[in-house]
Image 1: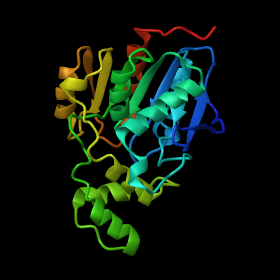
Image 2 (image 1 turned 45 degrees about the horizontal axis):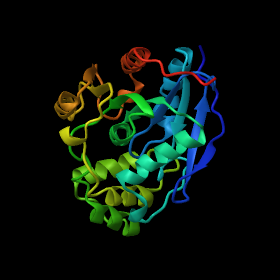
Image 3 (image 1 turned 180 degrees about the horizontal axis):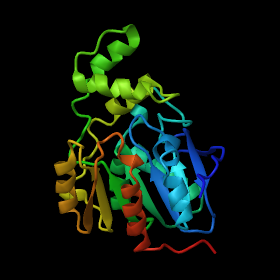
Image 4 (image 1 turned 120 degrees about the horizontal axis):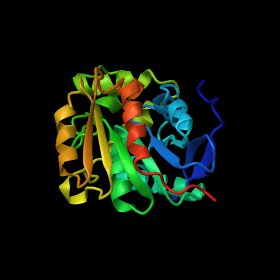
Length: 265
């Protein structure tokens, strides 16, 4: 079955007036998978070009993708105050309300998985089960050197910190990325709540992390504290290429099929 053609983005206004780009694939009356991408990626790069929209629609799902603020076709504010975990969760709920969706299943990768952890925990009536790809305990960006990144963007100063430089290099590879907005996101999310035993979502969760990802054991540890957490090790994948794995897609679809939310009348 060919990959579905890309629909034009539909903009949803967030509670603070930001435009959030969304993409709708499949039968509007089918159970919906809400999919949220990772840091410095986009909805189409993370989920569409990697085969997820094709395989999920073929499995009988409607797929709703979100460009998180600061990414893709969504607004990209440069003020750190526009970014917090609470704000990103509010964006997700606003999209559900705009599409009149009472209940969805959720797929998130990296940053999108962290948003999914908090959204599912705070709104178990709206999100019935969740796939969390590439998520560890703690904050994976706590070592990101915001000051170095800002100086690099402003004046081209060489970045000394290896992790910070790697993230900036990765971000530049995605067309349309705004480095200033992405650094503002990292700064704005400092101090946001981290996933752990005290805020674990109650519904079924499938954690999935690449066998070559350095956060593998931290992801296993987080799965162990979730009341209904399962774990899938994505064979032969690291943090950056895990979304391309067919085995990951198949595991997610099997997990979603264990619970089918009600279809739209």
